Amino acid sequence: MNKRSWQKTFLDSLGNVCQFLEDYQQAIDYEQKALLIADETKDIKAKGDSFFNLGSIYLQMQDWKMSIKFCSQSLLIAKETNNKNLLIISLNTLAQAYKELRQYQKAMIFLTEALRISYEIGEKRVQNAILQGLSDICTQTDEFQQAIKYNLTSLHICRQIGHRFGEAAALSRIANTYQQLGSSNKALAYYKQSLVILQDIGAKQSQQQLFFSMGIIYYSEQQYSEAIGFFQSAVFLAQELKSVSEEAKAVLALGETFQRLIRLPEAISYYRWAYNLYKILGDDSQAKQMLKTMHQLGVRS
Image 1 (cartoon, helix red, strand yellow):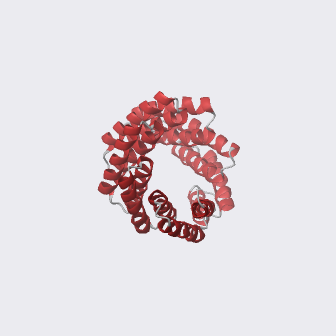
Image 2 (cartoon, helix red, strand yellow):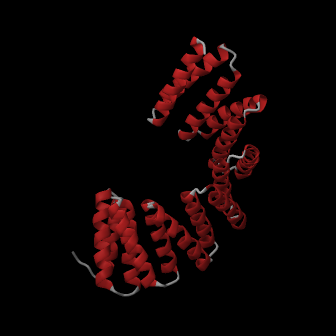
Image 3 (tube, helix red, strand yellow):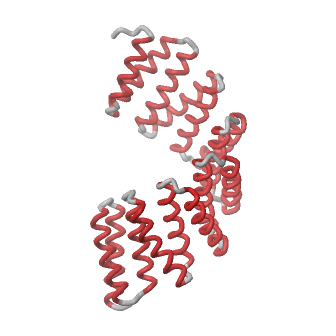
């Protein structure tokens, strides 16, 4: 590696650090200097990498059009050099940018191409990530059955490679989709499978979110006793994780559930608890709503 190549590698590293630290303008400056060196040395591979790095930075900055501009250039170089890894990450980043612009058809085209290449090179974890992206777009465009198919494929891949967290995540995504379809029993069946895995691997943050989601389903089905159990579990884990926002959400749900049961002293107690949490969070709007709700239930102080 010659001196200029070393300089480019060093600039890339500095750019990556600045990107991680969210100092995006400095990251862009380093990457643009790295791109100049790649151009000067006629290193086409390095040039493709620099274009992609710039596209990735702009994606994090939520400048979707600039991200598309640079990743389109990295994609051209990836095709020219048959660099399949660069192809996949360029296609995936383009898909993310187009999804944010709500150009879902374009996003699907790029992800489908990325998936095809990932099958060619046998990268199952990459396949899983792309399938998640495809299912997400299908969910946003109300193509729920297709979303389920993508997630079932993702589930199969995760089981093949022993990716237990990925398996739990796929089961949860399937459950989410069935919930959107109004199929509560199917949603709960998949959530329960996911919960067993999450408890086994000790993924407490995901467990907490799952407890809350399951509570919401039982609440919507007017199975309030079951809902209370899951909301209380969500509160317990939120406290253990020191997540005040998640604790507030679950405590509020408990207040609403006890209100539905016309167990008003308990409902008021949870609303007061939620009020204190929202004050800690600085969420004055929700705190005022708690005061209003308690006032409607007869609390005058």
